Length: 377
Image (cartoon, rainbow, N blue to C red; front, side):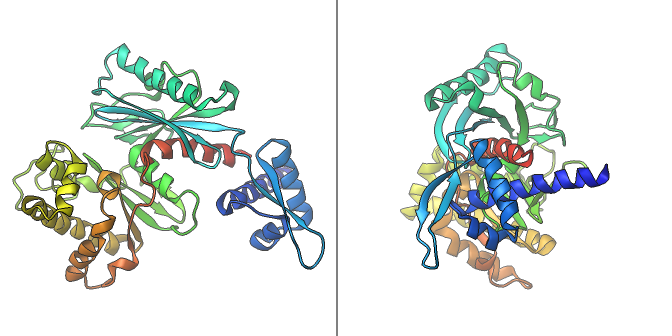
């Protein structure tokens, strides 16, 4: 019996490997898969037959082969299945529909203050899902599921929120949030979702920490290609690491001088009445006030980056609202880090701005639904 189970598991792993190879490379021939995965041609043929029969891949073109017959190249059939990701934040509900390759094909966003105690707010979550599905023109039977991304710590099984002080989320369950959603749902931590969107289709980051610099700060730790949550799902809570002992700013956790009080997006946009884009516009124009705030901001950011580098010795991605704007200022950040670094003097080799800038948190929730679907092949 054990032998049969192992055989089934191996076949499933092979199908997943073939699909992911095509997904990550865009297109692939059987020869590409033979070289890239080291599987036998009969195994590749069997896997591709399954994937094609289930409308997951499709032949797209003949590739000329100088040594013999032309080979057929395959790609993922993006129009077969879709997932929807929803980001529920303090002031907005954002939903995106992504195809089987994780590409955003439609987005809807509504400004609405968070109020989980009212039925009308929960109905708006469901309505947002329906509106983005209808705008994308996707049939019900093509929806794999809905990923709900929240700015709170989520239980291992994705069923309840175990810590959500900033948003009054604590104790809220997936069932409550999905009351008006007529599709399978799963709940995710927002920082994990953003990190998945950034790293899903690349093997470049096997060990990485994603800094989610929004109005509240979190991070996601990926080790050996997998999310690391710790013993009690508390890993990555860098927002509550103290970086400024002299600070008079009190964090919502009760401590003084937390990373969250020194480097949240609010630290910057408080200078421009809550408009982060305007802050960076002033910064690009060398506005004296913006430059001074930014210089202090980078000091504390560099301290946190260096501490995480010492702890994990891995790549670090700067994401979130601030990460979307930071690329032109990476040289300034590198300089700050290298001035205080002893063990890793070349920060440009391990610190990077995020590349996924379009609604990464909502997209990452949808992508995790797709990833779960692939894992079940």
